[in-house]
Length: 43
Image 1 (cartoon, rainbow, N blue to C red):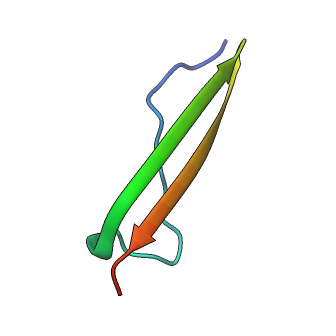
Image 2 (image 1 turned 90 degrees about the vertical axis):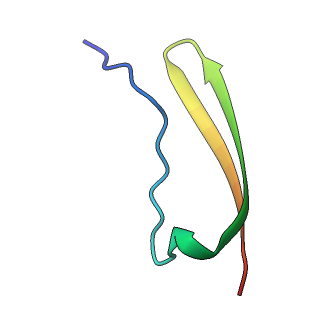
């Protein structure tokens, strides 16, 4: 049985506190989904 849920982003080796902008694009094809994420951090 497939579990349906909400998309989630895990930040690895980066803290979201300094996140300036994020763009998320999600595409669905039948039972699968793929996401493209672009994030900009303030230094």
